[in-house]
Length: 183
Image (cartoon, rainbow, N blue to C red; front, top):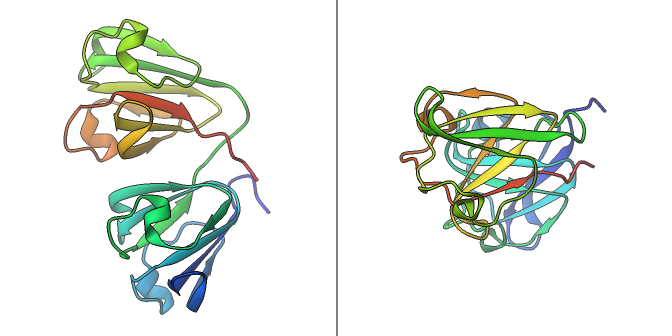
């Protein structure tokens, strides 16, 4: 198994019943594999995954770590739609990111190396995060509300010049945590 692979199994029915789809890497469209976009339970056998409610890695994001999710409420889903998924790429154990108030890495900057349940507690004056640089080895989950709640976005190593680059519709981020569940 490669460093970025894992295994996730999607089920049409609740409590792991009905038709199933096993995925071991990026899957940009469940329908291309003969599986409808209706998912009511999920079993993550290894790795950490980001799943999307639309094909082509679009729409609402859900982070799923190793474990069982017998119904869509367990992954904070609003319905049973799921269209694509991919493993979260993690390279090691070093986490570091820089957060910027303005687009293109301008304005106030704060560095994080650990989880942060409330971004303003770091001295970041606003809850508007417009650009970020992700360094190190790991992926991060960013949330629109404090204490890791609300809409979530996964970011991995790289530069994000604007909030639209992590598929957000607005720059509101209030909590951030490391993705640490490997296999």
